[in-house]
Image (tube, rainbow over all chains, first blue to last red; front, side):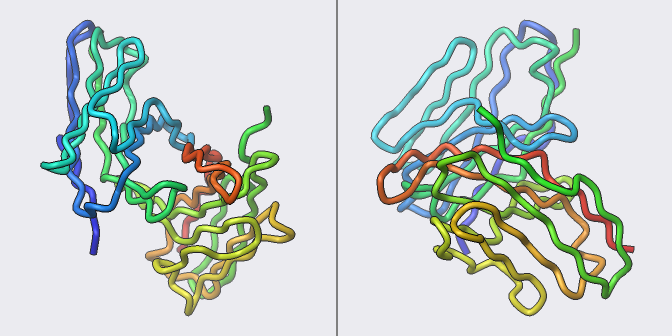
Length: 112
Length: 117
């Protein structure tokens, strides 16, 4: 079946460094790619998303890039802070949220 | 704006027992999702409603799981009978996506942590 692969599973960085998380999707019909942050005991929260007609999107310290040909998309966090420590999930879906598939998650540790 | 509400937050049951989870989505959101999140994994979509109709239940184990969305608002997810492998967090999400909008952002509730002994 369709799937989304996410790497790395764990990422540890020093405060102020950058963090990059990469995902690959298999369903070429996917056209919406959100990223979620999940803190302990809470549900996932959307932090940024990108649609298939855009190659890059940035929101302050967070950016996402999409390569539709290679079916890759990545999350970039610059100037990391301890409060960025959490589990991050990528996902791929069709417009309207149909066929949403999540990656397995990346646990990010930001060391002060 | 109130978020997605779920109850209970925690539930412990014996295998072969039944359990039900409740979700109240954000007001006006046409689409409601139930996900299963096993420890250390990403959420897995179980069922998606648009208003009070099912649009995708392809990954719902229908021999033991059932879900309904009453009057296109609240929803319940039931497991009967429960198995050990059903231990997970059950997340409910809602979005505005529907006939009048293609907005895809899903808003998640805090989840219900189910432990099956």
